[in-house]
Length: 162
Image (cartoon, rainbow, N blue to C red; front, side, top):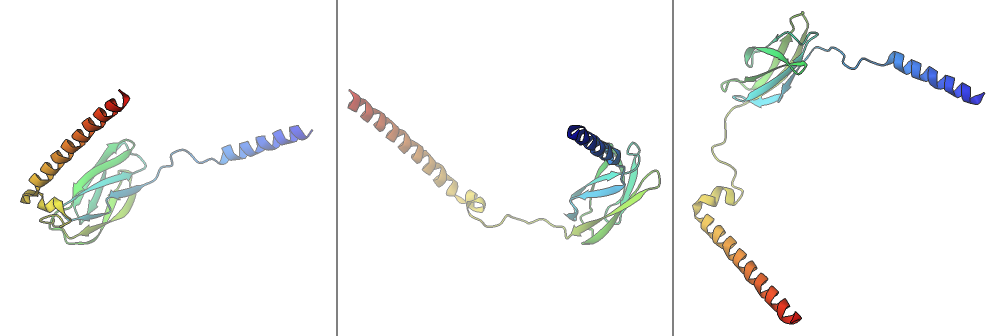
């Protein structure tokens, strides 16, 4: 009798779990930016979702103007470049879906500009200054010494076994 009770309890638990399980894909309206912080003059990826992801939607912001996001792999996507002269600050980005839904995200724009040269961390910035020949010569010398030691070791082993 205990076995039947356990089976009935397990069946009841399974029925409750199956009846309250959430659907695999719940429809949600959202807009995501990648990266959410970017320097002026750089590219931002937009990923969005509406109730119906088979129709394009519109994303707009003072940071880059208006852009259409198009269906791709069950989401809406686009890429846009923030103009290089955009004032550094936080901008709202608004998604407007074809069916009337909307969502917002924030884009942080940093001051644009690119460094004129890399940081002084060693040979990287000095390689063109004549030290390249020294490095190549040292490498070739190390290979030659390794080869000579290998030949010497082989000859010595043969002499000991003979």
